[in-house]
Length: 193
Image (cartoon, helix red, strand yellow):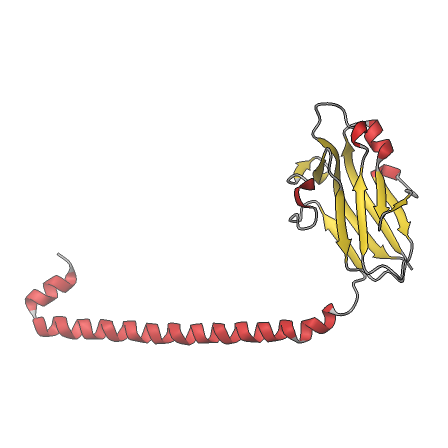
């Protein structure tokens, strides 16, 4: 038997008083919970207001750079890349055999940019030799490939509204039976100078 049942058997009046006291406690907790919820709602409204006003001023300033790390969620490349893999040197993402890494970045084009990609591996030396970059449909040669850090400079193009790049290897350079072409660790685009 529980305590309330024993209390009721001993004194129905005491039982009712105990129940009233418990209900009063529950009502106080409900009132505090309602107060907390209204404060949370007020904080959410303040946060929304901050995002609409203060933060929007900063977002209207042009971005200065863009970086993608293979450990980050894939919000840019769709089905072109596989899930991140960890090896002895860090994380990488493999690019599917017939796919290309493409992204359109909201970067002003009246200036030049450094572009670099750290490649973890290629499926063949032929794939590595064919590794290419185009920006706004124009091919860009690699200025450096030391340590598989591929680098170049993207020229200004004031007529362009964004920086659209595409990274790929020649599908014919991928050996039969392989469903991936290259793996990368990070991509970085930053203003030059």
